[in-house]
Length: 116
Length: 115
Image: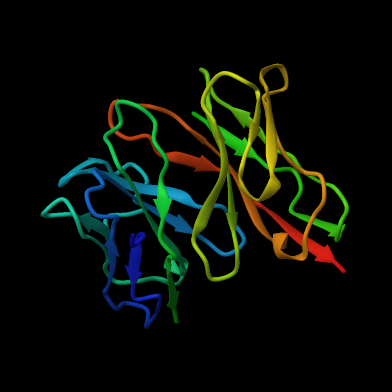
């Protein structure tokens, strides 16, 4: 079946522009995660959804970052007034169940954001 | 707070030689440990995971890892490397929490394979 998909795959933004990054998780997956991966670094957690509820947003670096998953499937990560330090690959992952037991996270290919 | 250290940023290995990638973690309870591989332009692919039980775990592509609680380590090994193993490898620790079982990743080790 289809895996996690993300769009766009590449995004170039001028500093100060707003961007929206989309994640389509595997159908039926309850949990959805966003991670940020700066160049040469490991991914870092941004936020977590269980269905439509955003249960953890402790990793969002500033109030310019906003994520939503209104119907419990597709999620959008929005970055307002982009800055150069926002340049990174944004990874989305989904997993089939809630957090009552650990289950594998399946990652999408990521969106590479470059802010000029 | 949990953390993961991968001491080697780059490793170069000859094709057919053995490979070992180091991973040390810090976590207050029994960790859930993972190794992921990332090829250029690709997402993360799970190689193997440790939840409990046998401390030597087998994964895909001929990889294995050994959990050593006394050393807080989870090193990844492969007996004979293929050119297609050139990629970046990430160790990660996960924890079940009331709201989210997010992964904490190490900084990664880039593996180069010489012909």
